[in-house]
Length: 513
Image 1 (spheres, rainbow, N blue to C red):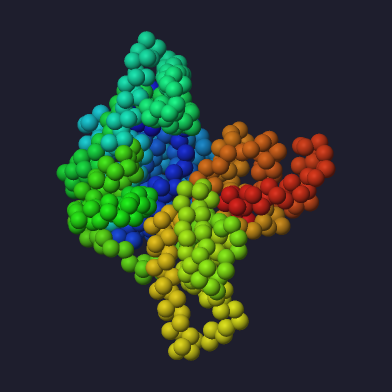
Image 2 (cartoon, one colour; image 1 turned 60 degrees about the horizontal axis):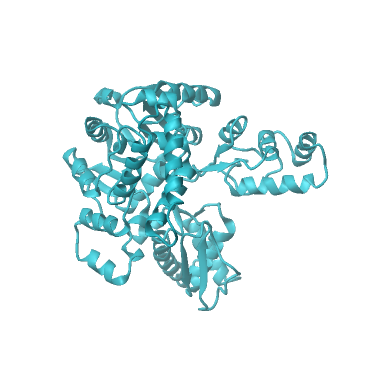
């Protein structure tokens, strides 16, 4: 939700969703990798600017009861919806207010994390300036601010499509009608050119993005009155004028030069310590359209080289798969692929294979680094006595160091996740399963559910909704099947289907007990 444009956000509701990249867990972990210790996630203060309904803050407040959360938005309707949700969910540690960010002063207090998703590039220049002023003045000394925005050079492509849609919809007054006409124009253009055609391929890609997010997003993004992407170096300079410095991207993989050909990575390395320049040239290479930037105070010392020792304090998990059970005691190469298929790694290192295989088998369970070390040692040397002897301690030390380096590399490749906090979900189905109360509440009327991994999943069918609503921790499996039979109208194959869906809920991080 963008402050300063309350009427449009009251008329067409912006669908606020949880954003994993803006969770204090992610921000604190990245800060630690660069040498900064933030307030503990379990006891922190979080402010979200342009929070909409507060749906990004609801799960944080529900799972971090000792932390305090505040969200502001200039539009009244989404705050009313969010406040009703806060009351129904009993979230005593979340305060949502109708407020323009320009009204925030020093008296509003300091926060360990300040979030501004989708605000900076969609508001007038004075509001942008005030946003960064709030990030400076109201940020705790070791705090982190998250700011996302459209960026150039890819923003020029989005701007071209926007300009065509604005011309086509110039006579339409209703915002949803404008969105429908704008989408129809892009559909028409994308189908009006013969294959193969670069322009047609680009338009089809833009059309896919438009369809993915829906007309409400089109109203408030491409067709918003304010639409001002910036080059990264311009954003960094603006932040510097407010006494803020670039910490990192919220997606660590975006900072890695290893995704480019060797001669390109070498050219970027020649920029030396000029991190802003390296990031800007990286954007040129990718034709990047969108950034999620983390900022800290300019006086905070940062370490730009990551250290394997930081990994010792992290929880680790990995949503990866392999086509077969790997040969763990040989140097035969094995391929591990992310579930989404967007990244993969091939390794013949037995230690790497054992660690990735273990993480793949227990996902979405998180393992502490020490747990993973113990598991890997047991996999590679089954039955070996770990007796604490000097030789055993030396072996463990070597495994810890080598494993931390491996995890850093796979994390940089976007195959492994690091966490500083362990969300309260379970990966095994208990006798009396209980679903995340927020997800059960959302299932009553909607189809979009929030997981305990701070992500969203969509309900597949009415029976899945009915099952989720029963998971309040009071029913055993037999009673769940009995009550589901009343909904389904049959018991044929129902027990197996219930068990399958319960395990699917566990894998989606929807169960708390």
